[in-house]
Length: 274
Image 1 (cartoon, rainbow, N blue to C red):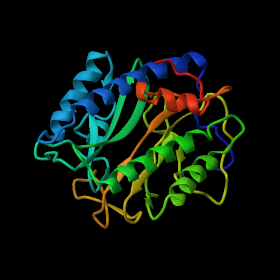
Image 2 (cartoon, one colour):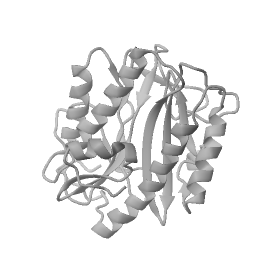
Image 3 (cartoon, rainbow, N blue to C red):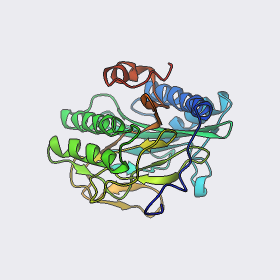
Image 4 (tube, one colour):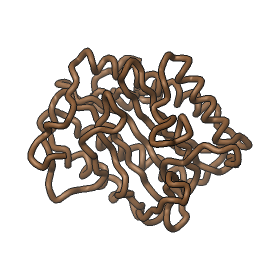
């Protein structure tokens, strides 16, 4: 991103934001379907097949499949896998696992991108709390997405909330991004405080906000497959993401699911239409 401006940042009209909400609804419904399908004994490749069918049945195309050679329609990251886990028929879910599912779809040329972390059967309290911290940090970041704010306010809110909840690792190597007619666009969105507050936020910006919270340290590494990112210390990680538009009335959550209705209302965000 150019240091002094936003010349390469795509701004959307209200009509285009509505089309992005349509793409976001495809992603939201797919994630709801996947959450309901997760169970011990199934493989991440089985989840991937469910996702692809859901997306294509809605008239959309999986954003991830074929992206720089990625083979899945979702990223399926289990336990110590932070992001970009490749769906495999050898990756079998077990009771007590947690799985982060990242899903993207493109509909009529517009992208939606969202992620959830799901408990497989019964998980321990530490895992569940880390998931809650990660999800709430995402909402804290989204709340900063108002005209006149600064890009750095988002990372400061996310990082500050995570730090306030104890000794969690806030992953720094990966973050959020602009989204629109491409899945990954400018600007990059950090999940931690910066020395500069960054560019001014304006109506029409659409950003994917996606914190990653580790139960151990923040440090990660990439596996030899060239995709899967894991925690260096082998401890578990959670990941949540929503695509959001900045409007005059506040943050419009483009990938909102029905289960987000109460949260969105409590934060005073615009109703995205469920």
